[in-house]
Image (cartoon, rainbow, N blue to C red; front, side, top):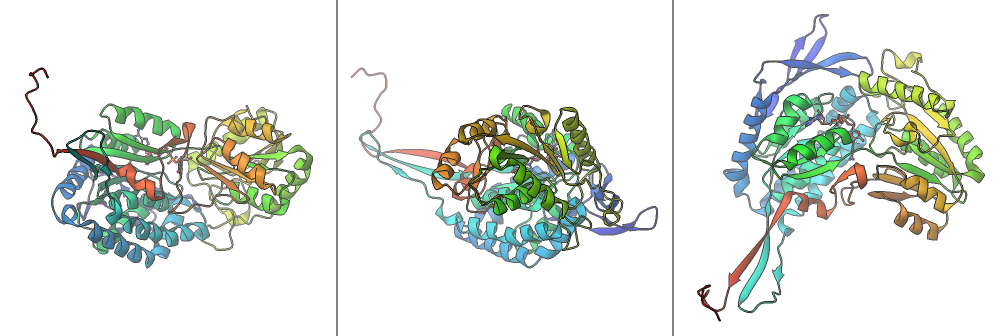
Length: 503
Ligand code: NAD
């Protein structure tokens, strides 16, 4: 990173691509601005990568995969290296969080909790590297010894979104490295800075050059050539379902492995028998804590009719107390929306919901509080009387907009919850243990939280069903997403006979 002055004489950070362990200028010689969402101003210059940069990065990753220090590491040594990386990242977690806040405007409290948690993925997956065992198959034919062994799939292309850049990158990267793969990362064009700083730290901790490379830029210029590159054997993507669909179709042309973590329209379901104080807290943190900019936002609040009005009143009252402002201030509870486009999209959904006949109970407009300055802020917004077939209930807003939908009984709640093309997360608030089990079985989603919401861990598989994605991250199984299985047959019996002799 270097520092330059912009036209007004303000200091600007200028970043470089990270290819083969070196800071590199983009082949096309272009940079673009990254914006600070709280100030609505550019703060950094990000290299505008092209297909040539992608090719250089993939070639570096391919070389590191096939020859050299990384390829020759024993699994145990690879594990030790991942552990060292975790420790090094732990000692830099706060500065990484500050860069994330500057770039995506999410709360320092949330981003610093994420960057402080990231090392655990490297410790956990570092512990798995020397346990990737094959199996001996008790084969049904005489005269054979048959076993399986695993091998890394090869060069992995990782494409990430802007909402939690480093955490979501880590979910993929730690598992891919544990498997022995090498990587080219294409971060979101809105939040590339922290990824470039992060990868430099991996190399400081001892990761050989070329194992992890970063090419920044736009989807069409960098993401698409990465998906197309013949030396890339797997694409691991987190982002919107529209981009995910395109990537899946493109990757299918070369039969690449694909992992897709996509969008959601998660139901957060409050039954009348729940601890309503806890449920209301869960409803608020499910949608407003990250300004609604999380794939698992509990954006559909399903409330049993007998407690509906009471719950709505409490949710509105609590949401009204949210302190908005500078995301770097630890007292701020709701920050800005990350990009101007996203800010406009959120406001357009508020108009759509009003046009669909939903009742606006809170917010519904840009925040013009003095503490919000020139940032892209939207007031926490709550609509009631939302029809589950409406666009507000079916489409991902990715902002601080809550759709409240009443239901009658368990069967009704299940029907509404599952009437969605998405299936990423769901919350159930109840004091009935039988209901908790029934609901967790009936809801079509990758995760169900009971009497809690938005908990994640490196140990617990995460992913979606339906349009929310393909594959799972986190947990032991996730390393398998970066491995191929090879079956080996050894003839221990009679020599192979002449196939043309009739026996
Ligand atoms: P996006 O799909 O617009 O972009 C994601 C990434 O894909 C970016 O790096 C972008 O540059 C790249 N890209 C765009 N077009 C491409 C192309 N043609 N080929 C290859 N790459 C391309 O998503 P976003 O707006 O950055 O992120 C928000 C979305 O991410 C939401 O839908 C959200 O639900 C989803 N998300 C999902 C999870 C999850 O784990 N399931 C987590 C966070 C966010």
